[in-house]
Structure formats: structure tokens, C-alpha cells
Length: 313
Ligand SMILES: [Zn+2]
Ligand SMILES: [Zn+2]
Image: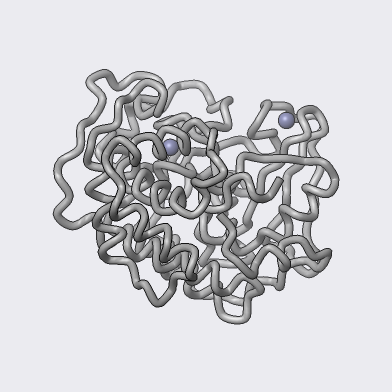
């Protein structure tokens, strides 16, 4: 969902304002060469909220970024006192794939907590109405919304409510991913799929950090469970092709490029943390929708950020 008022900004030809936050390094505690990194529940949503709040001032989409910052803060707060979740019995390939792992009701407890705890002052009228509607919704209706979100098959009336549903599902999936052992997910072969090794979802963006080779490694970041995994640079995350890759960037932004594939017409964003130190994949993806407009006009496509959904098409 894109909130009222921002559609105009999104559809203009003007590139998005460059992000202004060149904050301190917050990645110092991460082993840069890990092939797979499971999410850290203590920090994942708090850090995302912080980064969104940092990106919002002066941004064309300031209101939208503040709303998602409030949502991420509520996701973080919701983690306290949730009922235990259920891990899959078999930890095989993509154990948390929504198509094969049956989610339990703990995601609805997370949703109730998010709706209760979110800072309502950060919500536009449409989101407040969606919140009220969800508070009154029954389990069956909520499960239907969750199914449609996970299947990528939304109905026109879902747009406002699905933002909260997506946030609650992220909490449920991230909690389960945090309990997995990355050794169970890592294979001996280099990762050839651009999808999450824990849940099979597409990434929101890639981050290249120094280390490994002099050019640094790229890690992709899962849109659903916040796992990140190493993926070869200059290789399409959609089809795996390496021969028809080219890059686009917005004028004046060297820390971010779109990696475009002529083979499948897919693209993905790559952030370079040697240039801007405090990147958070989901937050910085939302703050750079101007680049999506640019490459979208050239006919390239991607799996949308869960908080933008189909609105970019
Ligand atoms: Zn995942
Ligand atoms: Zn491709």
C-alpha cells in the first residue's frame, strides 16, 4: 500500500530525493563473510524502525516512511509475550516455505499486539480505518488475508489491511527463522537461487559490504523472515543469468544501483555500505522508490517490497 498523497510523488518523473542519513556504522557486529545470517530478534525490527525514522525527514514520502517506522517499532514491541510458535518438524530445503510450512495462530497474536501497540499518531486516516477493521475481524477473515498476501493474490479491498497483516507475518516468520540453525540451511555449493534459503521468499534488496574479495560480498535480505544470504555479485536474482547484466542509478546516488537483467527483464537493488554505512535493506528499499520508477519505465520488474505490494506496477 502506498498511502494517500504519495502516489503523486511516485508517479512524477523527478527522482526521489537522495537519502540524507549518512549515520554511523551499525553493521560492525556482523561477520561479513557468513554465507547465511539468521535474523537477530533483539535488533532486527528496532533497527529497521530507527533507520526509517532517520530516512523520513525531508523525504518526499516522509509520511509513509514514518508510518512504516511506527509499524516496525510495533513489530519490535509485539515480540514480548507472544505465545510459542511451531517450528517445522523437518528442517530441509526452505523449511519455512509458506506453501509447505503450516503457520500457527501465533501470527494473529502478533497482529493483535501490533494493532494495540502502534503509535496511532503516525497513521493516516486510511490506515486507522484498516486498523479498526482488523481489530473487529474474525480468525477466518484474517487467515484469508494472510493467504492472499502470501500467495500474492490480493483483492482490491485488501490494500490498507494487508500492510498490518504483512507486518504480523514478518514477525511470525522472523521468530521462526531466528530459531533455525544456519548450518541446516547452508549447502556446500554456492547459492544459485536468489530466493531465501529459509522461506523461499524474494529479497527486498542486496547489500554489498567490504570483505572477502576486494570488491566485497553481496548479501540478499529476505522480505518475509529477515534472513540474509550471500549471493554472487552481478548475477540476476530472478533467473540466475550473468551475461546480460547492466546497472542503473539515480543521478547523484552512488551508494545504490539497480542490477538489471536483459535475459528476464528483472532487476534488484544493490546498496554499497562502503559508501553509506547505516543501510537497512527493507527501510532503504522503501526510501528509494524513485529508482524503481526509473527502471520500471524501462520495462524491468521485481517482486515488490511487502509494504508497497502491487502498487508500483
Ligand atoms: Zn526468508
Ligand atoms: Zn534475469
